[in-house]
Image (cartoon, rainbow, N blue to C red):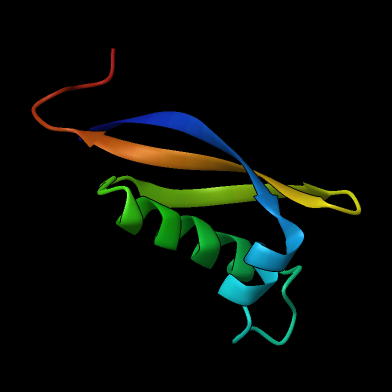
Length: 78
């Protein structure tokens, strides 16, 4: 099975991000980023698979760059 990878870029107010990942001991851990992205995919009915997520933040926003994998059925790599 082949996959295609697309990057999703999100800009989230810090307060919204922290509220969403409140159950995490460290909200600045990749597991928290992945959880946030997974919830975003669920809400948008996106069936992609979350991969690596990179984070950057300033005093107002969290910027997430998520690699999302999409399986391609009946395709082979060439």
